[in-house]
Length: 343
Ligand SMILES: [Zn+2]
Ligand SMILES: [Zn+2]
Image 1 (tube, rainbow, N blue to C red):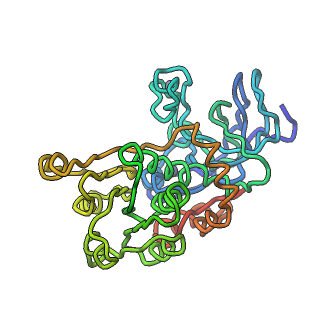
Image 2: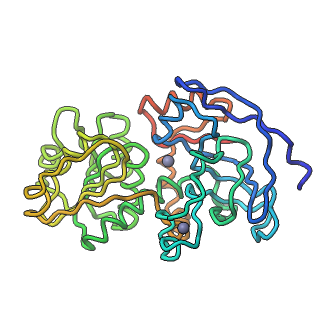
Image 3: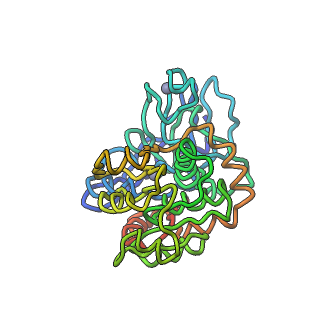
């Protein structure tokens, strides 16, 4: 092992009740097929709310970018390679993985940052199969956008395309980081001419959506459909819910046209369907979209290179790891885009 790697490291421990404090952990040594990543950046995610408020012994962080600090036996990635960590430690051998559906692995070994130590520590141990090299022209903070922003956002668009290739209008429910990612990827994948309406209740986020080319719908005092009408649009072909909020998701349903689709990306809450009225008669589809496939990363890396300045607008705040408490408090207030911890 490289002798500049320390034996121990301080990592932020999520103590519960919204408190984070440093603890010391051993720096793990990579075994066969494993890489030790020196983390350079890790983006905050709304899905860490439970860990922040309830606490966890696992080191969170599932949107990590860094460099290979040490490589275990049988690996081919060179020490020093820069890249990102895919959240799902997929097996590579099951029926889903063999079909490329690595986000639906049937024998997943773990979820980084949830049941395996993740990217808020100085070092993260990963199986080489979930490391994706990006090259040195992409900064670590930018590289994190390949994950929940471009990956999850783009996959939701791919899901919608399974139902309708000629999407003529899109409604994105929620302008949090995933909603902004869906908006950005809709413009990159479906063209800048596509009208993309984005709902939220936080003016800061609606302004960010406007800056990214979306048409903001403030739903504090109107339904999404009334908002659409104000833009001269009666209904949309596709709605993508990133809010995970039952009321917001439900309110999007009447705004979807006949033969249209609702794609659910935001976890949580319910959706009530009057099957005849909401699904059968109008021939609508409801689809789930979970994270993304590992094999979506190469094309997104090329898109990131081409559209770097546009995508960088999504990152609005950067903090050092010693400021992680304040970073989360700022993030929960809602007046941010993507928040990135750098170290
Ligand atoms: Zn996330
Ligand atoms: Zn598998």
